[in-house]
Length: 237
Image 1: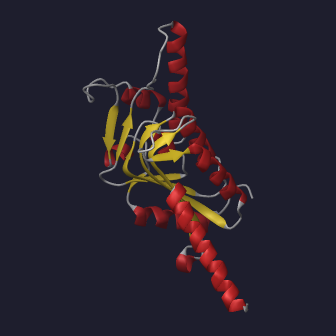
Image 2: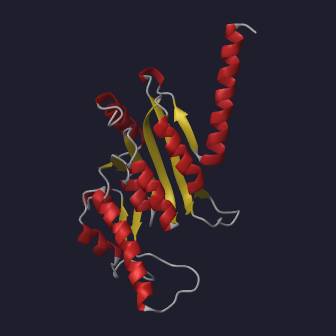
Image 3: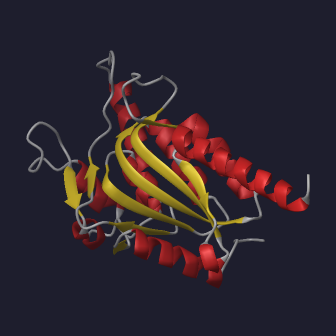
C-alpha cells in the first residue's frame, strides 16, 4: 500500500470514529478549516443522567461518557478549545456539577452556547465555561432542588436540601456576574411559575441578570473561541 492509499485509509478511519462519537455521545472535533485550530464540540442535550439510567425513550447526556472525554481533551495537546452546546432540561445534580467542575478546570479556552434551553442543573453547566452565549429565544430556568422518591420529613432533610442548593448557588456565582443573593431570589421566586418556585429568563434577560456574557449564536460563539485560542492558548502550560 502506497503512502497516498495509507493516508486515505487513515482519514476514513478518523471520519468513521468521529461519526460514531457524534452519534453515541454528541461529540466531535472541528478541524478549524483555514484557521488550523482544533476545537472539540460537546453537546449537552436532554436530561443529564446520573447513577441511574433514564428511560430508554429519553434523550440523555451520560456523565460517565462526558467525564472521560473531558479528561482526554485536557491530555490532548492538539485540542485547543472546547465549545459546549446546551439544550437540556436539567437532571442529576451531582452528575451535572461534576461535568461543570471538569469544564471549569480545563486549561484550554472554553465557550458555551445555550440553544433552546439550559434549565435547572443546566445553569451551572452554561456558566462553567470561560465565556457564554445564549440565542435570543434561549431560556434558563432557575428553581429549588427537587427530590424524587421517599423524603423523610426531618430537619436534617431540609438541611441537606440547603447544602445542595448552596453548592449550586456558589458555583453559579463563582462563574458568572450574578450575586449569590440575586440568584437565590430568582430560585425562590413565587410569582412566575404557577406550580413551582423559580424564574425563567429568556435570551437577553439572562445577560442582563449577569448569568450569561452575551446574546449570540454559533457564529459569534466560534468566532469568540477562535480569538481566545489565538490570544491565550492553554493556561498554565
